[in-house]
Image 1 (cartoon, rainbow, N blue to C red):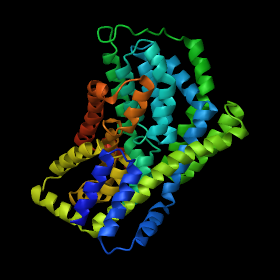
Image 2 (tube, rainbow, N blue to C red):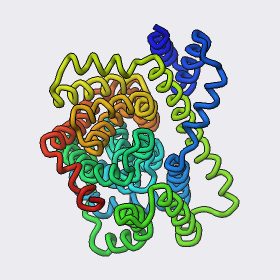
Image 3 (tube, helix red, strand yellow):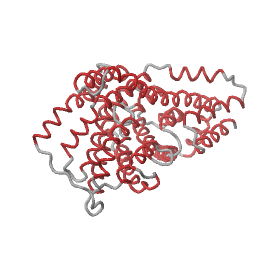
Image 4 (cartoon, rainbow, N blue to C red):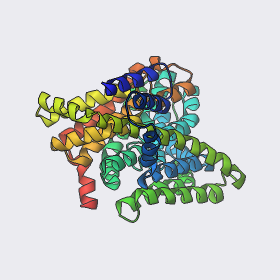
Length: 428
């Protein structure tokens, strides 16, 4: 009964607009006060949840993203993408997806990706005649790539709490993530036709000279994801060590090659990355206590028994998970879903015979869709702020882009090697 009260309090706090980390923390404290569990357990469990070498990768990749943004790497990536594909129909939209994909291969943070690329491209796209609702929906959807393709903060968290290889999850998400990016670009091509958006100013082909110049300028930035992904896939370093390398590389390139920032700018960069890190780690710590209290109340066993009595089909279970997580994503933050419900869903999935890497990647994609869907959708709120529209007006375009994500999920379910091939080939 106490677990039900805790869940109801959580949704109440979220409904009245309390930030997700505080909503979880307050509901947990209320639960402790209703039971005979010592309140001291709150601090102990929070410290234990944050005390993880794997989770150290999160602040490192966040810092790498901030250094990229301040160091000029982001603007070079956008310039490279625009020179390469800016002349294609919906050129700036295509550029947004492509640049977001490259940036995602470094930062692993959806918020960092969406803010960095969106702040550059959203105003430009609106000036070029793109519909603001389309622009906001597209950049929010493109930002969702960051927690899917490696080095994903979401996969780092999920792998650490369910004890699944983070490197294998990275490799498993590689093909689906790139398929989603390709699908978004195809959708942009059709949604920016002269019939649908007649006011768009079409870009001309940049030419070979401009492409060579943009490539030369962006080469150090383009090399960064290759170093990170190649090192992890080759077993040269772990995801956490990759975060350290990303920070050093972004600092050296941004400071001494692009000269995008000075040493006196470092405190501002560190404070910005610390703000994001504190938010993420607070959600992880409080959500871990929340999940422990649910387990103490035997909620996972009850839910598991109910699901197993409801169906013996693994695919029906997967369909239930997809529907449940999509619904949950409209009201809860992605990392909170992963921490609270990830272990339960993972345990049940293993019981149904799913490969842990396959299930983890599918779950990560479905969870991240919530990052761009109202009313909580953090990414959509960011891009709507940049575009000057309300999230409610973006539902039509968001439905199309979410459809791209779900289509790739369906492909992966029908052809599991899309997820399992690279981990088995590279890691055995």
